[in-house]
Image (cartoon, rainbow, N blue to C red; front, side, top):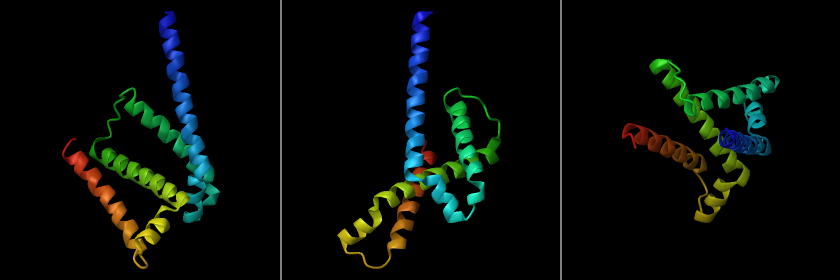
Amino acid sequence: MTRTLIMTLAALGGGFLVAAGVVALLVGLGIITRFTGISHTALHNRLYETSVCLGALFGNLLTVYRVPAGLGWPGLLLLGISAGVYVGGWIMALAEVIHIFPVFARRIGLVKGLSFLVIAVALGKMAGSLLFFYMRW
């Protein structure tokens, strides 16, 4: 009984630390406020924050506890698109914060076509993900 309690507390503590780190990164990068600024929907900022929290909770239920969602192919398609937008948003926010694209363009002497470079990176990421899931690696 004591061993189970200690393991439960350690797992919960580790989970809280990881969640706090993710939230700190979200706040530090200003991802949600950046999304609301780009989309001109600042009035719905609280809805975005609530959606992120509920998405994290739902994702944990699906992956950790293997709760069956029963949404079928349409649900899988919606989940895949949502996860892709989420990961893409994180990648672009991180790239924007560290200004990697202008530094990279300056290093290789790229004067025009930076937008094509960003699109190529996004398409490459998408193609790699599709190949990964199609080949069931």
